[in-house]
Amino acid sequence: MTTTQPVGTSAQTAPSSLRARLSELQSRGQQSLNLKQAVGVVVPVAVEVAEVHRAGHQLFLHPSCLVEDEYGFYHVEPSLSQTPPTDPRDAACVAPELQLSTLGGPRASVYAIGAIIYELLTGESVGRGMRRPSELVAGIPEQLEMVLAKALVAHAERRPDDLNALAQALYQLAPAGSVAPPPADTSHLDHHGDFEVDVSLSMLPPVPRQAAAPSPAARAQAVQAQAVQAQSPYDVAVRAAPPSAGAVDHQTEQLAALKRRLEADRTPRYVVIKDGMDHGPFAGVELLQQIANHTFEPDDVIRDTVANTEIAVKDSPEFSHFAKHAKIHRDIKEEKAAIERVTVKESRSTRSKALLGILLVGALAAAGGVWFLTQRGAKSDEIEVQGEVAANVESDTSLEVKKGARAGGGAVVGTKGGFPMLGGGMSCEAARAAYTEQMTMGAKGQADITAGQYGNVLNRGSYFAHCGVPDSMKLNICAAVQNGRAVGVSVTTSPRDNRVASCVAGGVRRLSFPSHPKLDVTRTSF
Image 1 (cartoon, one colour):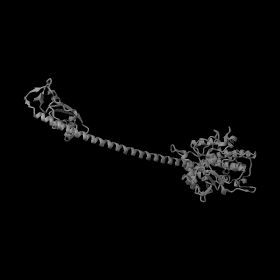
Image 2 (cartoon, one colour):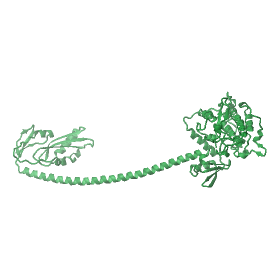
Image 3 (cartoon, rainbow, N blue to C red):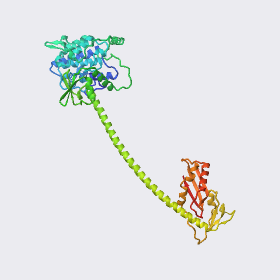
Image 4 (cartoon, rainbow, N blue to C red):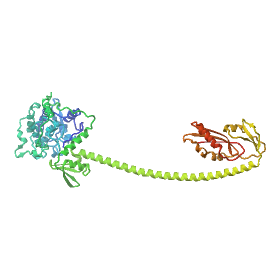
């Protein structure tokens, strides 16, 4: 597995450390060093760490604990090398047997040197599913991959422990890039006494059986890489950054790359300890699927049967990222389900309230309808009785007609019971102006018709249903009523429409009102 992280430094990263320098270069699009530059960094470090171990000290070796001095050389900072690294890229440099909990000796530092130079050359981290440097960078010599295969053996008992031999082997690959280390026997990288290195247990993948010939582009890149001559062995100037595709989520890219590398390793090497029971073994991609399905939780323990290590899922440099994302997705799914449950509950409550409201409105409407019909029937009966009484009064009274008589500026056709009788066909205003009532002291008059009785006739609106009045039109009707008929009518419409006004006025004139000898003026609007 190869782990890479977003650009930035961890809480333990010193500003002048190798990790900070690599992060800065990565932020500018420069991903790696060339071979000469990488050798110039690690060879002096390997020699220094060998002296530290001979003095009886142990440490965690990774880029964040390597600090640059005023001459451009990197040295181990003791305070930073005594605590486990927090940056996953640094954690990938710690030998598997340490499990980020135990300080390491020479064998662990050999592994760390191999992991550091792998990252310097490729820009990626050591781990399950990693690829050979020659697959990532053109021009990497085969001898370097042989050295890395020995340094990156997963089992400590099958890994070399001679840091000076490792420094000598790396120096021979690029002598111009570094000061010469002390003489050492490079055969100690293969065997030493009864000790034999087993490269079959290396984290570095084996050489493909049928290696394809390099493409013209790869050959050109190799020539360009060989031609690069930096001013300082520690300058970074090998591969140009790929064309920018805009603002890309760098962490998402790295997780995708990590997933591809895990999927490439089909070896069933992982056993998960859950609830005291072993599950597996699984290949990397199978374990990813189990984590994504929440079969295994962050506190479950992963045993790597190849590296012979045990580590919790949440602490694994390879699988902790996916466990976190799986938990986030599960939390989001549970939150959505909770929101849906609340929404359904509120929807049911709203429907119940709406149904209750409809029933209440219906009950009120029914009660109102009964009341309206009751009141309407009572008013109709009242009007009919009054009409009959008025008719009886009129039949007992003589009608004096004086043709051509005029009063108050309007046509008066006669008098009846002391009241002037108006002719029809006038406007409401003209009828009102023409009517002049003569009052006799002590005389007993007839009571006027109420506005409600007139409203029961005018407010129905059925008398102008044939006039084609639009729903948006406003009608104002004024009727001057005498003896049960409209002797004067005025109708205005908004918007103005003379045809509709004339039609409505005709309908009013044909209506029958409660009979009374006095002139009453009533108004209504629609």
